[in-house]
Length: 479
Image (cartoon, helix red, strand yellow):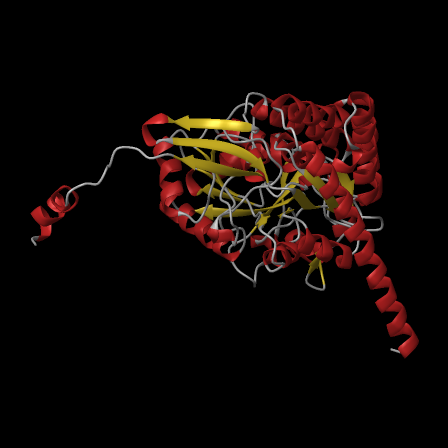
């Protein structure tokens, strides 16, 4: 590197840092005005403006088309559905939520809890959901009185920028400050993302685990989410046809861009043949050993997932991998048999494609052990699924496996991030707890964007006696 080149790089870095600093300064000023005389109505109105910016049908479709065109990932119709459904569900979740002023009184303890904004939020978002994930973060941030600055992936920047333009158009209708919602100046870069992480009040990271680690070491309070490698079990009591339909619907949605897409299915021996028949009817094609090898060679190039294979339709997968399957016109996803688990078997990890690893288990205990080993290899803390009529087995998985979600009898990618058919928070960012190296074990939601101030008043003394505390222990162990 010449001295002139080094000087140019230094100048470029300084310009990038200065541009981010100016963006943050505008966000701080806007947030100070936004929260100076806070009202729940204003916060809610701003959040609804963002919801309509993405959900208005013509804009939704335009942004979905732009996302697919610029990232090369997924398909338009599913992105339209995702943008609509995820946003609608989030708005339902927060509709009655208090996020401004006094949010809780506990008279018997003399406590009053007051919701306070965290300030300026930075959000790093992935190319897999370049519209839905930013919108989710923006709505949560505004609901709580914050400003937010997005740092999208380079591939997703154009779609994210379009979303912000539509948000600002909605803000103009209600007289809201556009500086509340910004993006790092285009084009995004690692320098800009790093500077954003270092200068905001809270950083939210969805996607790259490198970005998650950088966020946690940035010196700024951070919420990162973990790697998905969803593994589902089909046991001998399951409604096999329904299980196959659910798995097919989830695996093929947006061509498996979701971190909750079924990456491995563990089927008990007793129902393997029935499951494969039902999966075939749902569009699943079982690969033989030679086809599986071709898929592995095509999907992993120099140890990394190939852009030609990830989030592509079934026809593209077959063409790129050079495989032929029966009735290819109705093929929707592919089941690749696997035995090994760990670094030596790439099929046991996340694939971001229409390829699902197929494992067979002797019984439920064997299936649970295989799921445990897959999670420890990749995806610890994220989620597992179970298709079964045995609710006790779902509880058993929740007690024994390193997972923060057990999804029972549901299409996995629709359920983990919240659904109108379950009680989880609608979100596109799933915390994985300490198993996944994360600071949260919940679906990211509005309470993660708040500080809560507690007013503590004096109350009558509540000190117990020593006997009250130790009586049961002394009875068991003696003094």
